[in-house]
Structures are given as structure tokens and as C-alpha cells.
Length: 262
Length: 320
Image: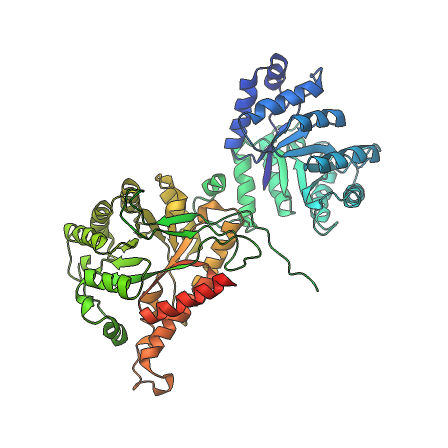
């Protein structure tokens, strides 16, 4: 499973402070900790407090690249911020994210193509958040069709069914899981699937457990990637074990260690 | 016409170097590189295959026990003298590598001491200049005495030494690490143990690239397909990116082939089977060529004619 570490996000106070004070040691330590814990890529988000996201994301990309060559997921709803990040990036890039809206797709898909970046497409639009599986599928199909027409490689597309908190949208959980499965059959070659995991446990008392249970189920429905907290060891262990059960790696007594050695 | 679908692999089998030249601190003339492929056997269109499968001649430290007449007759007198035997393999049969099995250290077959075996290895390294594979007697307790001594006697020659097994790997791994050799990790036709043993050995500080997997094989008609499917699965995992199993395979072809009934039974007993002289050679050849298709990188063989046939076969495959 492709793990994107979520911790370099200005939403967290330590990161916001480090961005403001240009303290690169905090950012670099956070990057390395996540990689050591098994992250394959790192999400980079300036957060709501950032006054100048364009310069902040470029600075973040720069200082992270001093310590790792892992791919960076440039996380912003503003195409201009993503473009600033792409310019600063030498590592492989992931654009996080486009919606199914034409104005977003028409800017971000060509941008991803030009920079050989992977692209995360979320099944939402300016009409709001989908309420069921069919609406998710329709939005996902819009994204896939746009990418296919623009000659963007579908293997580099990651579709996100938009995970909602279980305590807000309990009836939708099963739809979300089923959508993961059905996204995979929209086209051949199939797009990848991804979730922003932590949202599922927003506002609940047992966040780690809810994350773990949802991730395990999502893996069973065919999930390829997740944006999550890799420092949650039990969560990572659950993801590795779920893939073991699906026969995606060879079993042995030390399979957890083996996965981390890969 | 439709194009064949090509697989794109992200993993690569580790490259193992067998033997060390003078410049590298050893004294071998022919240093062999094995492994390093980025695709399944001989699918040249899908990825690079930088090194061909190699064959090592099997020799013993004592007069062989239980070998069929055909083998005894082929080698003749030299079987009594491991050094002369080794030289015959290299000079007459052009062996590129030798695999010496220290059966004589086994309590049931002479119980030779660690000092005796170490002295033999030192002499052998002087008598021939090809890389060496050194196998213990098969008795764990005794091998823990003789193999470290042999490691030391061959220090710097980058031999391949075995076998480490799940219940007995620490002594050998430590000795191999100290003296700059490679190790054979042996598992009983069990993919899970093969992976686990690699992790255990690498946890001791020996890098994964220095491990050769002995998956344990069966000869044609004696479980070859079990070994075949395990080797195939290991290789698929390796090419998919699992570094903990991205190792070359060493297959002890001779010891399995020559104990098959078809190789040993006399022509008088089974007249319809044809000449016994040829049957053993055929059995060893077919077992080897089948395993090459499963991914075998290093084959340990006995009969010079079988080696010649398999070498020719490999040459043809590598040309295609």
C-alpha cells in the first residue's frame, strides 16, 4: 500500500510555528520520522494560518528535499499554490488535489501532465459533497474522462471517494467502501484509489481504533493508497497485516519487519 | 498483429559476487557474478538479465559414499584425493566453480576435525583458482565447529558457505560476516521459512545481497514441481519489490538427481528404461534445465556430460 504521511500540515501548531519562524529542523525531523515509520511519500500543506501560501509551500518543499528524495504531495485547494510547489520541487510530485469541477480539472490536469506528477482526484464538486455511492461514481467518472481526453496516464490518477466522519455520516460509510471497489472498474487500465483517512474519526473518542478499522476494511475493498499518520504504529501494522491477508506479500514470522525493510 | 503484453517490474534480484581476485584481497582468477536480473528467466524483452546461470562441480572431502557406478567410473582414481579431483574438474572439464561438500566431518563418515577440514580448504584454494562453495556435513553441531574454521582458512576469498537453517544460522552467519564470505540460507521447500531466515540473517548484520537461497529441490519425478512453484513465487515477489527475498537461488541438482531410482536402477532390473549409463546423465540434465526455467542461478552438478549439455543449453537461451 502506498502511504502518504499527513503530518507536515500547518493545521498542527508545531508545524504552523515552524513555517512562520522558518525553522527547518522541525519540518525535516517530522519528514524523517514519517519516512522511518513507513511513509512512501509526504503530504505538504501550509495550513490555514499561512499568510503567504505560495512562498510557504515552496519553502517547505525546499527544506524537505534537503533530507529526502521521497515524493511530495502538494496539498492545497488553490492551483496557484500547487504550481508554486511544483516549481520548487525536484522530487516526484503528487498534486493533492483536483475536484470534478471543470475549472479545476482544466488547470490541474495539464499541470500534472507537464510536471509528470501524479494527481489525486476527489469525488466532490462545487455542488457539494456526494450523498451516496452513485454520486461518487459519477464525479469520479467525470475526472477519469477528463484525464483520458487530456492524455493524462490513468495509472497516475488516484481517486478519493471523500471520507466523512463516522459520527456525522454513518449511513454513508458502506457507500464509501463500495465506491472504492467500483472506482477500480471505471476504466482499464484502472485508476488508483486513495483516502484521506483521519477524517473518518474526526470528533470521535477512539480515533486510532476507528482509523484502523476503516483502513482495514478499505484495503479489503481494494484501496491502493492512504494519507494517514504513519507514526500510529498500530495503524501501520493493521494496514500491513490487511495486505498480508490479501496475499500481497509473502507471509513469514517477521512480516511486519519485512515490510518495513522493503 | 497484436503485441505481446509486457510486464514492467520494479524489483531486481540482488547481484552476488563469488570469488575474490588478487586486487580484492583474494586469489581467484575467475570471479563470477550471479543474479542481478530484472525479469523472469529469459524474458529479455521485459528487463535486463546481466548474468547467466552458472554451474559448480560437486566434489567431496572423502571418497563418495553411495554414488552410482557411472559417476565413480567417470572420475575414477581421483575420487580418493579431493585436490586431484578438484583439478580434474577445473583442468579437464573446465569447471568455473567448485562446490566442496565436507561429508568427512560427519560423525558417521569419518568425523574429521575442524583443523583437518580447514587445512583441506587452504590446500584446495592453492590447488585451483576458481571460486569455491563450501557445504558442511549436514550435522548441525559438527558444522558449527568446522564451518567457522573453514571460513577463516578461506578469509577474503569470498566463498559461498552453507547451509544456514532456521534453527541453526547464528554461528555460520557470524563467521561468514567476519571473514567476508557469502552465505547459503536453506529452507525445506517452504517459502515462509525462506523469507524469515533471510530476515534473521540480515538482522545479524549480513546484508541481504550476500545471501543465496537454497530452496531445497526435488529431482524430476521426485517433487521438482514443488520447488519450481516456490522458486517462481519467490521470484515474482522479488521482482514486485520485496527485497527480503530478492536473492539468487542455488540448487543442489546432483545430490537429488543421482538418488532417483531412474538414475540408479540397473538395466537388468528395468530393461525397458534403456542404458543406465545414460539415464543418470539425462536425469541430472533435465532436473537442471527445468530449474533454470524456475529461476535457478547456481546449479551444483556432478556428471561432466550433464554439465556440458546444460552449459550448452544455457548458452543457447542467453543468445535468444
